[in-house]
Image (tube, rainbow over all chains, first blue to last red; front, side, top):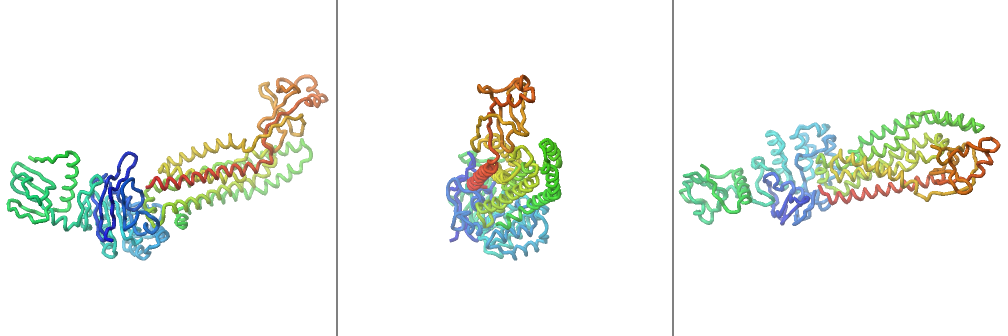
Length: 298
Length: 321
């Protein structure tokens, strides 16, 4: 089995509002997956569905070959760090580790203690008195000491300062290097994830706009600039994702598996950031105006 | 899970234990004095006149501590507000439910363990509190007209109240998901149910007994009349819970007006003949139903607690996250 997470037309409705609607995606095993999308795209809902905190209104979801939250054994396979990394403010770190040991049959106490030690945290300290970065690290420790097969993190670094952000992601990378674990971390900023992800899923209003290995995505997208021309004149193998035009010049972001050979274009590689923004913009434009439109910048 | 539930509950448990210890010390030190006072004054009085003054004197002793009976009424409410309502609501509010529900333990087991541990502790605290007060107050209860006025402060009913208040609090917290509103709603709900049961259910737990019989004057019996209306009998039936007790004449009319202030009734010699013509219409619950009522009412509140416990389970499954 090579898929860690698989959804089919998955939907979750709260009252009359769909928090997630008609979402179909597949996340392969053994990857560090960045789940990127604007606020309200349904990332948190998707992760909560995946870990069994909520049940779907429609469609299906399977994690690690089973139903999410289906009994203690399925829960034991999953690690989850919720948004804003909640912990019991009145309990000490060592009590949190105790909780982990009591509630998880697969608990790795040595790993947890070692990690807290490495972080330079005093186990007697209450988590309410920790900084946001420290608390996030404790939450990550709790999730990883379960020795999960699938680790889900919901915007783990959104509230952290840049230094804490880097340290958190470094810690995550060490875990990935040491353990055989599939990781999904969500963010509305791709820059947070760029250094750690090798697989990217862009989610806009519940729909997957882009999914694939980061390397392949970067290799198959190009930024073309040259004299102004109609994008429709491009070969069929090149799909325009984003275009902007001045009086004289056109700049396009295209997807093409074949190399761009047209000498009229200056071809530059794209960054992950460009890519995500382009696909998000495409989704937004598709929503606002069904027919394609040229945006003219003067 | 029981260990983690205890880890979260131990501070609250310590507070409760401390309060119980304080209560035990206060009552433990003064209790023997109450018994001694009872034995030397009330128990040894010879004549009726002497006894009634001894009882009055005894009843006005230890006034402050006698008022502690209120505690037995308040404790279940406090349990509902401070143990019940925040149990799940605070977790929802701080997001820690997302942490604990994603450990390798089902939510059903999580809530079941917490409900059992804190629920049983609630019942134990209320029970011990009631036991201490009931024991300490027993000499006062013995000299009182009836045990029924202090019904809610004695015996086993406080255990039922505590179980209900706790279960109501938890269920409210699951539904509202915010601590403060859940606490307020719990208080309102608990008081409402208690009032309804006290005023309308308890008097009718068994059919009230209606009797019409010739009036027999007993020591301690008296008459009461307000605004020249019908005359009612007071103090005629020690121990019973009397709802109404009034007098009728031979033709069945209620006796009122200035009946006792005219004719033969005014003279000592004629009084017996004057009241001998009267009959007493009595509606009451007899004293021997006291413990039956205690168990009935406890059962009612325990069933209510179970209903709210079941609702908690149901809502936990439905209102996910």
